[in-house]
Image (cartoon, rainbow, N blue to C red; front, top):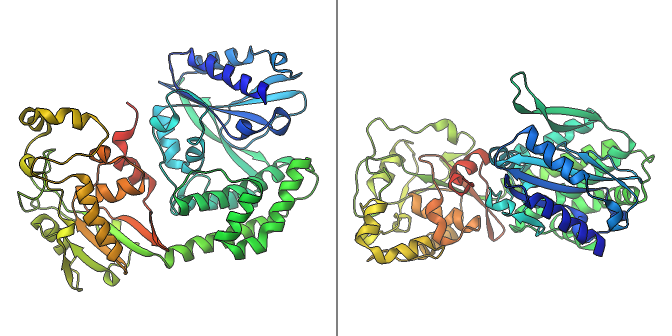
Length: 476
């Protein structure tokens, strides 16, 4: 695979030369396959800002690559659409360019976490890795229902006998905008799309439950599928194997059994619902605002009331059976007064493990005042390592007590608490270094759900809310 690696290296070097390219990655199967085993080379590029001029410049530079240098008697063509369309044939090598700027990449992570999370796995990149621009971090069960390429989109595409995709167009003001288009499912795309649906649906499901970003192929994929969902495997593995064989042999005239594909997705949807129904649900709720929620270190020393006229939007809680949940709260007034807004009838369990981080001698200080008063902490703050506040706690201390409480929770519960405890729980589940927990921004009085499946907790948060929580991790 010498020539494949040489071509990838050249592509990335060409992109590196453009100072407006923040990140460029080669993703997909090219890393482990030869030219005759792939249909295209997927290249994801993130620019400082989008313009047709920059995009055309990139395309023209890539089109100048001489494929004969890589022992290929083919012509390069550019596919700049967003979606699973295939344009290759024996005389062409397709460069599938997917170009974003920071803002559109952020939106893509929110709308299509499956795709972005998979791309983040690549080691073939130049400049910044994609995840440093903004990361999906992990997959969640909710992603299957709400994401662009979620279950409903797949079903609609199949029923309409079309593939939906997107491309850039120029609006009436000369600005770039995304346009949603459709492509009729021909024999080839039916086979490719059918394989894509089954393989990615199962792979992403395994990723969500394992909390990992791994690629599974061949026997390993089939064994994982059988382990996690044996009944679904028994019912549809032969169908999947037929799709895979037809794809490899390019037997595109073999009719796709669309009803079986739709039945697979319907059955998978029932599994997601059943998995969620049988899970233990924990809602993390930060208290309503107080006058001291102004950016200062606000821990255990001060105990103000919530602001006058603060209310809870119960619409945010409508999907949860609150009356059947155990209610836990921090002993601080701001948490207890938030609980009162709900008028629960069940008993309230007050638990010191839900107290805010103990900031010790820094409680009440603004960040700048903290560094002025404790200059020795500047180096600690600038690292990604955890540290203990003077005469206070570290995030590791806080994480131990919140973890202990979660391990004891055997029933659906609501935990009324503070930003710090929720930061440690979500930071741990999303793989954030403890020294960066301070960048996690927890909204007030919004339910943040985590669910326990087997022995493991899995976050299950709406992606729009996810975006606001992790906004400070977005490249600026």
